[in-house]
Image 1 (tube, rainbow, N blue to C red):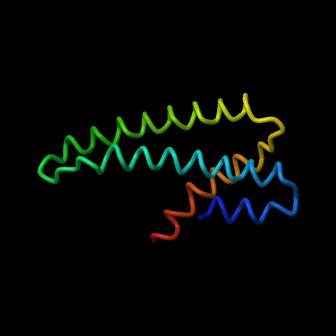
Image 2: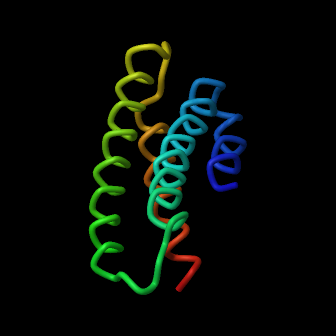
Length: 101
């Protein structure tokens, strides 16, 4: 919802900014979705040591997915607004923890 809202808010500034923001938010969502699926789908409360190891592996996988996604977007999408792309990525990453406080 945050990515879509940012994209719609940037639409008056041009379609490039709007779809760049949507792509940035999508990258954040995809990485977070992978992390959550990897960690919590097979969660067992009786093994906290395994949970911690799963967090580390999931975070590494998330970083690889985000890096590959950004590389693909930068290479394949022309024209692109890097500011909108990165700003939307950061907003999607930061808004959820702030809302859950």
